[in-house]
Image (tube, rainbow, N blue to C red; front, top):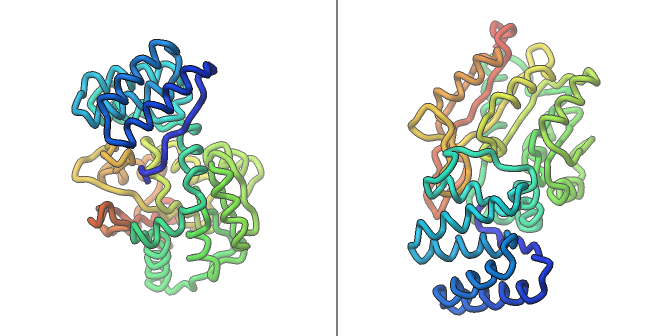
Amino acid sequence: MSDTGPLFVSSGDLIADRRYKWALDHAAQGDLSGAADILAQTVALAPRFATAWFALGAIRDQLGDRDGAVAAFGHARDADPEDYHGARLQLARLGSGETTPAMTETYVRRLFDQYAGRYDESLTERLSYRGPVLLRDAVQALMDAGGRPMRFATLLDLGCGTGLGGAAFRAFVDRLIGVDLSPAMVAQASAKGLYDRLTAGSIEPFLADEIRAGSKYDLVIAADVFVYVNDLAPIIVTAARVLAPRGLLAFTVETHAGDSAKLLPTLRYAHGETYICTVLDKAQFKPVQIAKSSVRKEKGVPVDSLIVVAQLSSAGSDA
């Protein structure tokens, strides 16, 4: 989901803001060199104008000026500590700075707030997204193999988005809880009337609150969520503490041939299968199913993915 428009945050200088918009007009007409010149003048006038620095980096990148793009994205990062625009990710993509920087909550929230209104249509029609259905089928197969009914008293949907996961699992759960960082996405999910409780907030603090409240879930799912998380260990360790006995954790990741987390050109993270197994083991999970599949397409090409279902090792004999 890397096609959302740029976020405009005013410089506080009316002249600089007008120059920025003038530069975008030039870019829209195909005059990238002219746009870059105007943006260079703009940031000279307003050196802390993160939006203009980011746009300058993007245009220099299109022009093939890698060093110039790196310099501009570096200024955007320094002027925008919360990284609204994702400058650190662009720097990593260009091979500068951290190789797998964490996405800031501000960046992810803004990304999905912008995208919420067209999220379902874009994923299901344009990207052929089927993560929740693949998760449901994987859990169903596991329950069938163990002679257990496909029924859960409580399900927690991490990064529930607009409720696609809830729609896939609602018929099989008594109580459905969802949490998502984006208030706009939560509003879309709420409108569907699928969830018994929805929370707009960060996953880890939410899980910490659930632990303090003594909440337990029979199934925790995360569909197309971990592609926005570089280090999965903290979430998976914390999720283990809200699982009921014999509870299951089921999630999807995009993957690659390596054994670590990797930032892709799409500005999403891929996690190697070895990495996934290591993180699950450290959290005392036993993977009961890791299947290679494709949860979506990128420019018409299936994206290598993993469908993972895990159970706490202490309950491994029940799997």
